[in-house]
Length: 130
Ligand code: HEC
Ligand code: HEC
Ligand code: HEC
Picture 1 (cartoon, protein in one colour):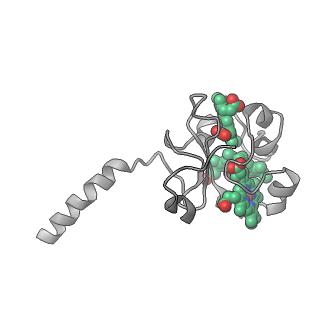
Picture 2 (picture 1 turned 180 degrees about the vertical axis):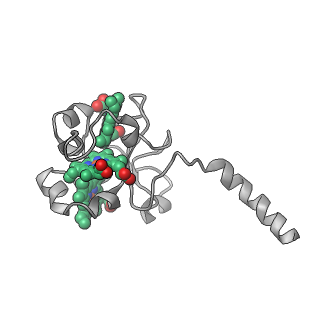
């Protein structure tokens, strides 16, 4: 009994920090080169979700996404022009840009990173911006 109560109190700080709005999973890429400066939440790109639906080549060769979290200068103008995410999120292949919150869904303050990657756990400082 007292063991259970101790466990419960250990759990509380975790519950307070955890917010269900943040649904980044292992391997998701958080992109925040421009979003927060512009008053938007950072973007969560669910990599695994996309990787099981498309070949690597579609994005990393045909659409020109560099293999680096935050390594692409993505803006809404480019997306609306059909580049990057906009090649698919155009209301045809996938839902379109009007659904801002579906992409801009990360907790404010989250830096550009591969979510929960070993590297982001080991690094105390964020990667310098290019
Ligand atoms: C399909 C995903 C997606 C959707 C939907 C989306 N965005 Fe973005 N947006 C991005 C990505 C990716 C970036 C680049 C993120 C970064 O580097 O911070 C970005 C960047 C931005 C930026 C900063 C760069 C710039 O272009 O000024 C603003 C502001 C922004 N989005 C606003 C919006 C608004 C408003 C909506 C809804 C009308 C929206 N976004 C919908 C993916 C999306
Ligand atoms: C739907 C598009 C898409 C597909 C399909 C895709 N990727 Fe990615 N990948 C991205 C985006 C977007 C990023 C993040 C780029 C950024 O932050 O600017 C990324 C980042 C990466 C990175 C760097 C971040 C990390 O996780 O270390 C690697 C490595 C990578 N992809 C490998 C792959 C491999 C391997 C495949 C196929 C099994 C694949 N990708 C399929 C879009 C895609
Ligand atoms: C090669 C096509 C393609 C590209 C490029 C692409 N997406 Fe997607 N994305 C899809 C498809 C297809 C879906 C599923 C749509 C549906 O369920 O109706 C999807 C779904 C999503 C979802 C919802 C995942 C879920 O759990 O339901 C998010 C968030 C998302 N994309 C963000 C992005 C962002 C951010 C980018 C650019 C960095 C991007 N996508 C680039 C095709 C793409």
